[in-house]
Image (cartoon, rainbow, N blue to C red; front, side, top):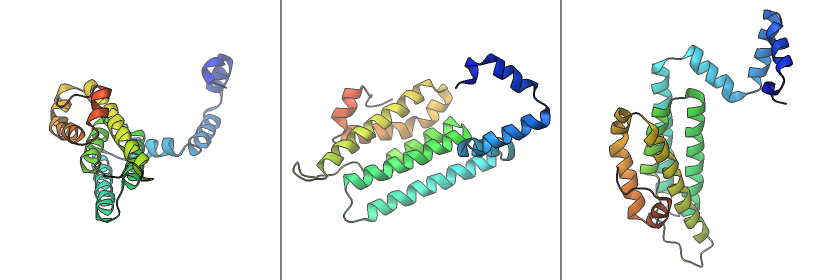
Amino acid sequence: MLLSEHKDLKLEIKSLPEKEKDKLLLRLIAKDKILTEHLHFKLLEDEHDLVDRQEKLRDRIDLEIAELLSNRKMNAKDALLKMRKLNGSITHHFKVTKDLNTEMELRIHLFRGVPIDFNEGVFSPLHKFNEKLMIYFAKSVLSVFNKYQKMHEDIQFDLKAGFNEVLTKLYTYKTAAVAAELGLPKEI
């Protein structure tokens, strides 16, 4: 049931006593973890905390990619799973902070670090993960590129060098065909 479909309910909620509204609001907020974190960030944190959050997530990305690279049996499946997990962490960061700039910086940092070149044989059970990784990586870059194009030109300028590194990486490996098919440029 959507509140917008029930205008009478909306009016009744507005007419509730202040104390009762507060109580209901707190109960609703407690049910949504991300909303609770977002309100904590918005009401109790400042720019310094945003920088701390970004640095912690960047350090986590570096650590997890280093663990991945140190694994001698590293394969496309491991890289894909790690990338999905880290992408989810960046999405969570954005939902909490609503800061597009740090989201873009973190995604570009992830794309620059995660390995995407694996030589699994066609008959290897890991071959399908190699294809999935290439497609996931290229589509993730496309998603970030679409957001990048909508940003202010000053911010685009700040992100341009890093994004060009990602595009170069994309067109250097087997992901080039997928990138071209998706219409991603070779350079910004």
